[in-house]
Amino acid sequence: MVRWTRAVFRERYDSGAIPIAVAHRGVNAVTWRADPGSLDASTYLPLFVEGMRETRHPYRLLAVRGASELSRACGERALLEALPRMVLPLKAALEDDDPAVVAVALEFTRELAKGSSVIGEALVPYYRQLLPALNGLKDVKDVYVSLAVLSDARAWRERRGPSLHADDVHHIHDLRPASRSSRVHDHQLPGRGRSKRSIAALVRAALCALEASGGADARANITYLIPAHVSARGR
Image 1: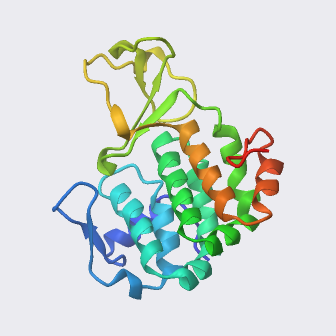
Image 2: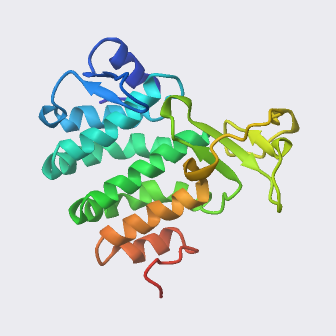
């Protein structure tokens, strides 16, 4: 049985056991040494999901893109078979202290749920393991992430107010209150525009996708674990 620690993906990749590499044709691009549709999803998908907790390049990029591309290429049946082994590493990523790690885990959860109603319904039994972390993150509206360039994923905290200056932005490595020593003093704010997303917004998007694809029992199960959840479908 694999013990899911953040070093597993790195060790397997460095040994050549994972057939993926960084492609230099563009940002966030990877290349495969084997057709991803031919790979054993039950073996590789849990590894890629575990690797989402990596913060170093190229491991973060390879893990996030690998999980996303393999989950689309492997087919619904293979994805269903891999799902039970993906839950523990996905839970670990959702509970990580690094907001950029949490962000990619939330986005992957949303992708899984939106992939098909079959996968969405298959996720419902795992809500008890996955959603408690989201309950604690749903109100984190002042922590932002930029995942436009996965090799340099960033997170920062912004003070509320009508205007924002460089001294109002704090780079952070976890979801705890920012310290004064972590202030940014340059004049370029990171991640402005489309790439800037708050943790709360990512949680909301993931929950809406889970509810939309999870079938008749999804809403009740989400509300049981996250009582403050407001359904996208209304009451």
